[in-house]
Length: 104
Image 1 (cartoon, helix red, strand yellow):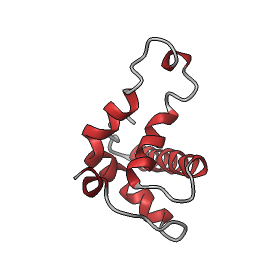
Image 2 (cartoon, helix red, strand yellow):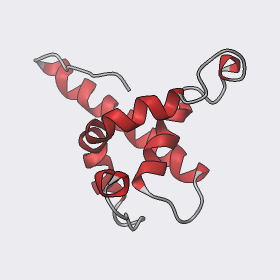
Image 3 (tube, rainbow, N blue to C red):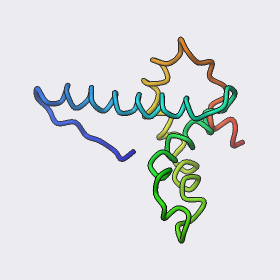
């Protein structure tokens, strides 16, 4: 996901709601793709991988570590971006350690 800055005014609420719905959709899709037990790191890797899952270039010529190279240096950003979504999903998921604790 790329950074998004909502405009001010009436459209800002619509943009914020659409952005949250997009993040929630990515999270739900990732949950369907992941096994029953997974880490937040796995969760973020799956979310980032959604953008490249159907891209045939990932099979030929693209860096096979592209998703990892996106996720690992940006774990804190993923945590911040998905915090509201994770809160929405708390009734359905038991979250494990934070990614920083996993990388240590």
